[in-house]
Image (cartoon, rainbow, N blue to C red):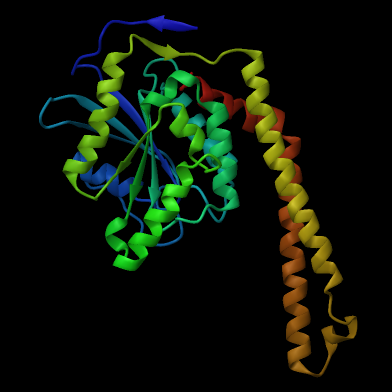
Length: 304
């Protein structure tokens, strides 16, 4: 279902969500674009723990912009599913479902991450389930951090990123359905160019509030979430089985040989870690139909 609205002008705020892995440059992008100080992280731990709305106007047009800076994926504490659920919960609490539907999404991806990892494949698959077909024209995948690469690394990364667009590439469906791919060079001009692309698409569309398409789509998102949780559970379960097979002799635990004792203690610590991980994944599966799935369905409504 779509609610028809008139053309948007500069008095209407254009709201854009920034997504990406920890360290992709989301907070830096928001800071550069808005000329405002936004706390920026420089390590592997996420700097942004909760979403943050950064408001400003484009200098040339006066267009009001709201950038939603979000926690990064590949977090050491929360899973990507939990991060998406937390983002959705925050968006709903701030009125971005009923009052200020989203105009676009910028997925920031560091050029240093040319290799496609399992987590990225899974969250890209989920995003494809969440996005309605009309949303892709308002999605931009912006590559960042090219300036951090040597000439040799630059060429290798270009080749790796080209593969992402191929028939079997992780971004193939985004390309086919109309998403835009741009390079961000860490300047204000570059950030504003990316934002302006979404502004122009927003003005082109008359039907702005694209609501979720019904039970069939709910089931599609739910099936994907369940599959990812089950895959994670099965993977950890298999890792635990393999780890148990590698157990050092039990007597090593109290051995007078400090090296044997150390190896046994390390094995035991890793076993406990895998067991805790398995319990946490089991809990997520049990609450799938409550908090996580409800929140991800809220997220889906923003883009349908």
